[in-house]
Length: 263
Image (cartoon, rainbow, N blue to C red; front, side, top):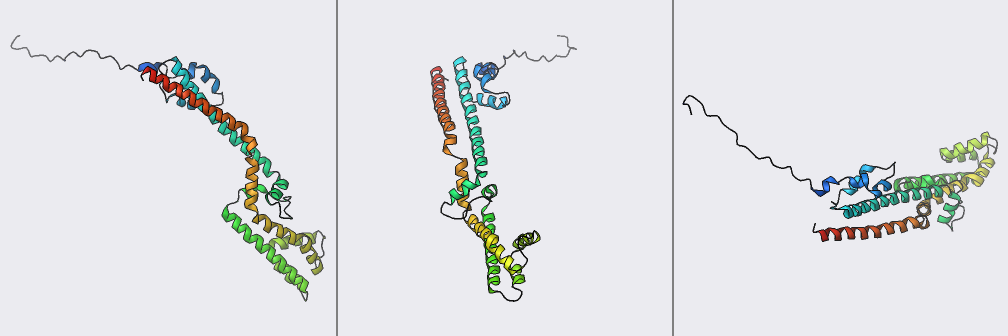
């Protein structure tokens, strides 16, 4: 080497390293969804194929048979998901039918309580009541009945201005109801008319309200029982049990096959 020449650094040659093998599963990872017979049939056009694909990724099938079993498991889970959706739909259908049948629900919930016909009952409101709502309704119903009967006692006692005193004793809602009948000339605006109104309409209505609130828990239970009727869900329950047994058998087959392969 010439003394004036500088040495040149030469980078060491590194042999090309092969890329890591993706393994047998990577090549067929999505084949079950794209090419599997079950996958093509089980996922309906309106359903989420990505969600179904997630079910396929739990296991790593090593061959065609294992891929079929994995797909079978995913299809079973997918069908069980539909069963739960169908169950909810049947319960909603039953509840809708029950809340529109107050004349049957209320007397059945309180079979020995006379006067609860359910003709004017809004079961939808009763079913959605909270404990606090029920307590408040009970207080209001008791107050309504108490003030109605106080007005009735004032009228029976008679005396000067008995009509005015009795009318003031009523709750504002009851007074409005009374005034409406007076305007329609169904009752005269005097003590005799008010006493008749209380006897024929107001007192029975207040009493029914007190009893209805009292029996609201039973009415709610009866409504829910009608909505979640066992015979409505019997076929779905049998189908779900069938899917459970099929899932257990398929999973056992897959695990046994993997064990035989030594994976």
